[in-house]
Length: 171
Image (cartoon, rainbow, N blue to C red; front, side, top):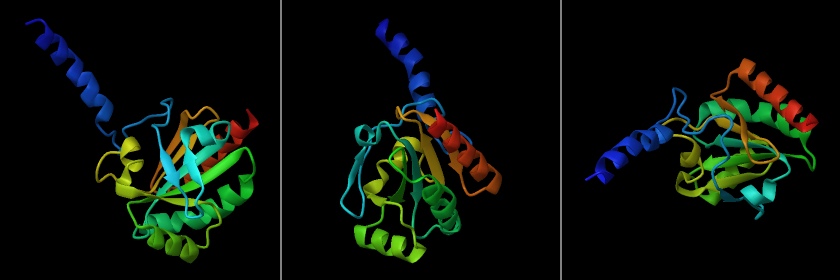
């Protein structure tokens, strides 16, 4: 009989951890990045362990997303080109589209940073709630801890993300 009240006390804590915030995130700054494994269009496999030691931006996108299309050229020039090197990785994560479509999208957008399909959105739905929109960037420090989150493309927030990346690279 005492087990049921104890479980009832735990349920609100479990549910609140999965309830999206006002921007659709179910993770927050300071959380570890949930486990992921993504295979980029060039065949490179990225996991939490393989990117440890780098500052990482996971850019969640999709070919049908107009805001993503607006942000991607800025990510290419102001983030990828500016910071590329052994200590930094910008990885596009394409929400639930087949490999051929992701490859065509990357070519059309003229990006040189790696991009990987996210089949069924397994990585996306580990950080955001259902139907919460894909235009997002998750900035990870060298230990895989989430240090900055963006939603949509807001130039002011984008500049703050760049400053956060610069700070993380200087650490």
